[in-house]
Figure 1 (cartoon, rainbow, N blue to C red):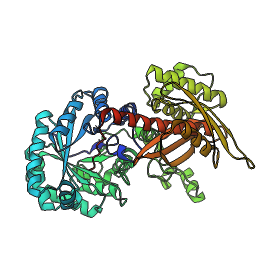
Figure 2 (figure 1 turned 180 degrees about the vertical axis):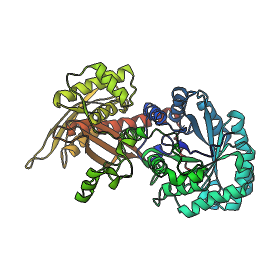
Figure 3 (figure 1 turned 90 degrees about the vertical axis):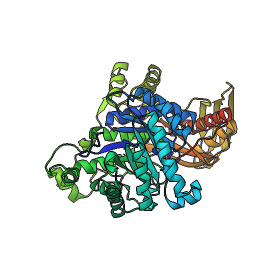
Figure 4 (figure 1 turned 30 degrees about the vertical axis):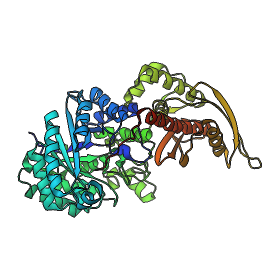
Amino acid sequence: MTTHPDRIIIFDTTLRDGEQSPGATLTVDEKLTIARALARLGVDVIEAGFPFASPGDFEAVQKIAETVGTETGPMICGLARATRNDIKTAAEALKPAAKHRIHTFLATSDIHLEYKLKKTRAEVLQIVPEMVAYARSLVDDVEFSPEDAGRSDPEFLYQVLEQAIAAGATTINIPDTVGYTTPSEFGALIKGIKENVPNIDQAIISVHGHNDLGLAVANFLEAVKNGARQLECTINGIGERAGNAALEELVMALHVRRAYFNPFLGRPVESSEPLTRIDTKQIYSTSRLVSELTGMMVQPNKAIVGANAFAHESGIHQDGVLKNKLTYEIMDAESIGLTNNQIVLGKLSGRNAFRTRLKELGFELSENELNNAFLRFKEVADKRKEITDWDLEAIVNDEIRQAPELFRLELVQVSCGDYSRPTATVSVRTPDGQELTDAAIGTGPVDAVYKAINRVVNLPNDLIEFSVKSVTEGIDALGKVTIRLRHNDVIYTGYAANTDIIVASARAYLNALNRLYAALESQNATGKQPVTASL
């Protein structure tokens, strides 16, 4: 077995743990789009989902395995609890991939054993080797995670890991499930595992961590110094609660501070060999794609990919950067693929130019998606003289991430002003083909539109977030609307872009309602509630 002692394996869990961010639920096609981007980015392993969780998750993992899991592509991984049904289902979903891995887990901390699993340590020591061995009988590559390892008794943890490796685990993942540890503690945990698990040289040490205290990236870098060789992370750091360790921050820290980390991987300080296989120039476009498809905006001051990451407002900083970028920039914006946003297309541009530019931006569309996106492009181009790459991304994402149009907006019209009561009229075509029209009064035009839509659609929900963001500068810019609504403690996201904010708001709301309606229909058909898992 190759344990890659001199480089870092990047394990991306955006499509599994990242999707567990409230409101970040993705469709199968959206997951496939992100998986293709992750393959271009150069990640080693894609954790495509939790196949047993739902039919949708199974389908997504299977499609990603078929499409992205090629001989030259990344390894495709599926999560499974330490049960036969979970493991068997994961193996079935992963079959089409040239390289596949089952990632199974069981909690080891006393608090999880007592309150969640209701099991003893002895029972865990029996279950782990049995389930790891079963997984290994189905695939050649098995990863085992002791959930809540960061709060587990180290001596018990050593026993569990030894048993897992002996049963066939090729990767041992150490999760800081609740984001509790500090860098020195996490580094010491990895060091203790290396020194006290007799057969640890037969497996790769991996780490997974949450950012509840803002320490996930720092913890991982300390783990690398102590022997971890696989990092489990997500694009933009999305994930449950405060999220996961951010892939872009880890990769660029290892890239910028290569001379510092080289000795920990047995390399000469001056070695220029990259520490990961990531194509850093794909980072920015992948970040934007994930942000668009999940509806989770990147904060302006976010490291590496935030809007202000390479911006300088201070006069002193501006003067220094103009003289030499190194005065205030430790990395080049172009190293993450951030370039000057050149104007490339206009209303006279044809389909071939449109298709070519989309390919350059990383979009692979079906003929139907391309046709719809091109029509939207022409519609926007008639209203704007200049179309930027950011406009193109918004147009295409608005098309490809729409939920099935079970309810379709046919008309929206509003009346408002300083001395009038905001009133909206909407016409919506229902799933059975009827066109219904209704009107409502609200505190503002968008509130009136949403109240009118609710009267027609009649799906109880709580609107918990409404945000509008301009794609580019200018009075004629596309406006992106993201909304989140809650139904029975599940959050659904809606998204739309349009030069008319009212139209975008109505489309985004119906987009979320369509997701809610589709989820309710699926639950009624299968009678099965989705299963969630946490590491």
